[in-house]
Amino acid sequence: MQSVVSALPDPFEQQALELWELLEARFGTRRARTSLLPHMTWQVGVGPYDLQKVLPLIDEISRNLQPIPTKVIGVRDFPGESTVIYLRVLKNNHLKSLHAYLWKLITPWLHEPSLLYSPHNWVPHIAMVWGDLETERKFEAMRFLDEKDVNWLIPIDNFVILDHQSNQTATCEYRFQFGKGMLK
Image (cartoon, rainbow, N blue to C red):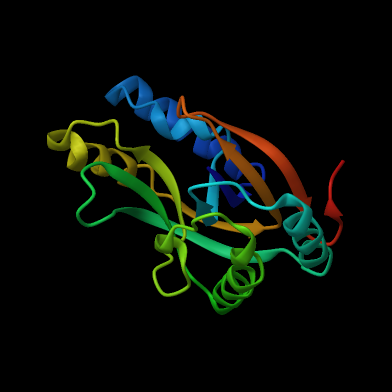
């Protein structure tokens, strides 16, 4: 499984890592941390991308982009999902149009894209708890995060291709900086 995400820049990456640590200490949650880095997901596929096709496309897109000021505020959960808790990323017109463009451009080169990330269904978010919390503690964890009063204005300024392993971990395969392209 692979995905295209945007890693959080500092100091927001550090703040999200601290929230993961607090959640782990208080609630025993660890699964969200297996992604290695706090991020917002653009697309996920059951299988891999055709990297020969996708890498030049994302490189070109990222070279022509400037950072997108993006508001992150509040805590939410996905209806019907037992214990997925996230920080809410507010969709703005720049994010929506970039997501739609990225989806159209690279989806043909992804084996079995998850339709949860299609433009119609996409809910940009930063996962804090990902399915490893007892259902009866979900609202306690949400209240705990609410007390942290997350109200960030972050610059979305990169794409990262993550490779998800069968042991629930992920590795950063490629990174692209807006205005520069693929980093070596």
